[in-house]
Image (cartoon, rainbow, N blue to C red):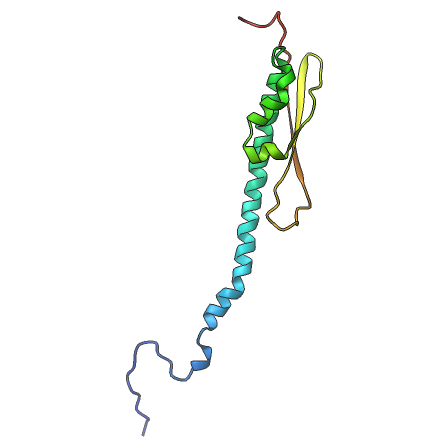
Length: 138
C-alpha cells in the first residue's frame, strides 16, 4: 500500500525547511557585482560628459581669445561656457598661434570607481582664426 499524500498549498515543500532564504542570500551575494557594473557605467558617462564640456570650453575660450576686444578674458569666457563642477576642475592654457589662436583645456575626470582611474584627465584644444580690424564686419 502506498502512503497517502495530503493535499497542501501549491509549491509547498515540507522537507526543505533548511533552504528557506537561500535565494535572498544569492541575490545579496550578487549585489556588489551589480553595483560595480552600475558605477562603471556612471564613470563612462562622466568621462564622456567631461570630454564634451572640455571641448565646449576650449572652443569658447579660443573664440574669445581670437577677438581683439575680448582676448584678455578668454579664461573667464571658457569657464563660463562649462558646467560649474567641470569649470572648477579645468585648467585653461594661454592662447598660442599667429594668424590663428589655439587654446588648450585640461579637465580632471571625477572618479567614482574609488581610485581605479588614478587621477586621469581629458584634454581638448580648439583653434579659431584671429580677428583683426580689417576682417571685422560692423
